Amino acid sequence: MSRSRQTHHLLIAEDESHIASDLSERFTAHGFRTTVVTDGEAARRAAMSGIYDLMVLEIGLPGEDGFTVVTRLRTASSALPVIILTARDAVADTVYGLEGGADDYMTKPFSFDELLARVRLRPPRDRQLRLGTNCSRDARASRCRLRQMTSDS
Image (cartoon, rainbow, N blue to C red; front, side, top):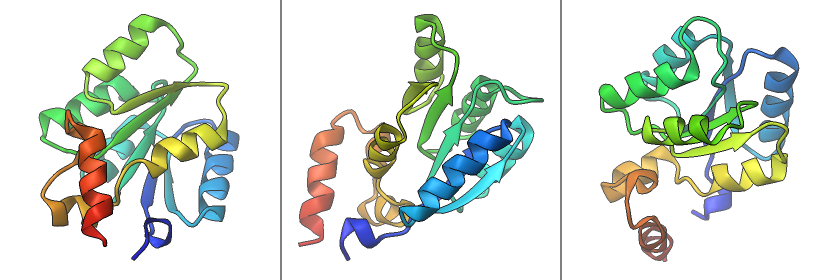
């Protein structure tokens, strides 16, 4: 099965309804399944369900903020890839998010095409399990992705 035909199930944790709606519509138009949650506790619970391939996470969520969500996921040994998408553009926030366990960090305003490319770099969960690895957490991510591409041949 080619990579473009695999369906990722994305969890979008965003409290601004117009951004959440736009992300959901645009990802759906590109063949992804999406679920939107609007607060930190719902984001953490959904992420821990094991049914998502990736989470797009806003830092400024009500309740638990995004930093807390990703830290608690990693503390619970969740390997779910997380891309932080936030208006917080200070270098200290970026470093804090990445060191706290996020796989990537993008600031708003953002290019949807760039976000889409970053999401597509992450393998679907079933492929991670089949290969016994989570490339987003692998220090040799480019070699890991190469192994994945050649394993389909």
